[in-house]
Image 1: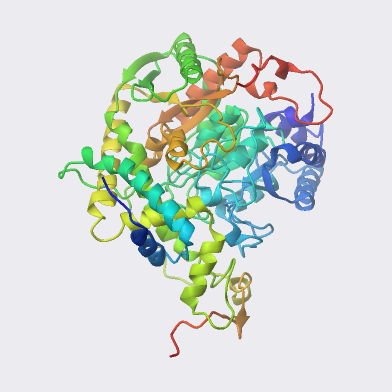
Image 2: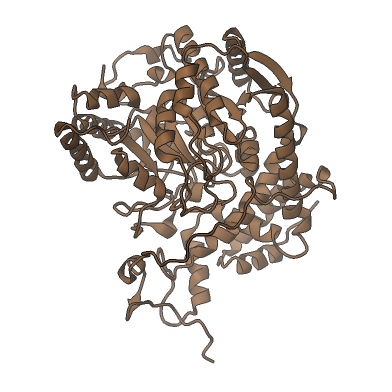
Length: 516
Length: 98
């Protein structure tokens, strides 16, 4: 089997037992990137030299007989271009930061380096993580490896596509309203939004500070848990970081992988079905629920009526926070500066810089937030949205009295065609209908591949939500489900990703139903 | 249903320091109106006695010992500057000189 097709846990084991080297694994992924990037465009920046140097350092350390720095030492990773890196540019998919070299590392970046993880480069994203398709990147869209005319989801479409296209076994995303989970669903990969405060936001360029959360993007649930334990934990540099141990997510995956969910209560959220949900998505979700039942889970129906208001509340809260956070991009201290010809004032230069440097979705959200926060409208919009947030938290609390985890489809549809929703903000926003409540409440949630839609042959995600700080519960259920699904369908879903290189060989991908 | 005029968009853009074009004024006026009328639904459920939540986790002040610790050097801080002079950020004039 090709090195690029192995999950991170297996690669790490081969590297740590010296059956292969970290350099060899890194080279294999760099070769794969060279072969498929022209089609996929998952990366904004590659650092082959730096990656090979990190890999060589891991090999040297193992050669000396030292134990590996972490269970993932030597394994390559793709980092979303919203985490700052002192040795690579950080653009957030925006012209306003084109070529910017940050003067320091994010905590997540530092933890990855300390763990010996090999950072291959920075991945494409919707500008400042605002979007659900990666079409809002100033540097062009990323394409879905399952169907190149489709979006990979967003905002972390680059990270999800890199993992689905076997360009990296691991990636990091950020999830403000679903930007890890929805791309996971649309590319048939695993995406985890940890409990808010579980992973440090220090050096994560802020979009909506009360919602943003970094997390793992992988092809297997175990890999996600291993990565979660590398990047999670308390950080004094982030005042919202939880000062408590990382939930035991790897142990939970091992327990889940036995395939026994006896006694686990799974709540199906009754609000997340019906109009707007594709038949193929609903069918795959129903099958997933029956599989959970077969594993011994006790399935109950739970009602969370205020979840219907989570989407509108989100589109007031997130733009409000964004309008404030993005005020820092003013062309004065770093980034783009336009119109500084000696005649214009700082204020005029700021306005020209921001006009030229931001794309349409970012401008829309800044103005929406400015409106919602302005005197006279504050109570009717932002104030009301904050109350809905309280109601969503209460609905979750009541639901978690009846169930240990809640499940839903991750997104109402499969991957949509590039260009289809780009001029219709509301149609785009609906992609995050099911993922937003967990951001508003701050609890843990993940998406695990749930097979292909029987209508269009594209991947569907199963969302598993758990209470705050109970991330391990979601992992356990996802791991059990993954084992059962893989067994029933003859292997991991990503083995059915079409071949993306020019000299195509017939493979298991041939059974994919032709896209509409 | 909220209505957003071109003038209001122009005002918002000024507040947000965005030098939007005439064409964008038309585009954004229409789009913001559609988005706002959709999100205005939040007022249907949120009764007066519901306390607002600003943050998912209860936030309290986080303190540390009041001892100096290293920050960015001047050189690092200026490393991304469009223009620097005498170890400082060089910016366009901030006051009118008339």
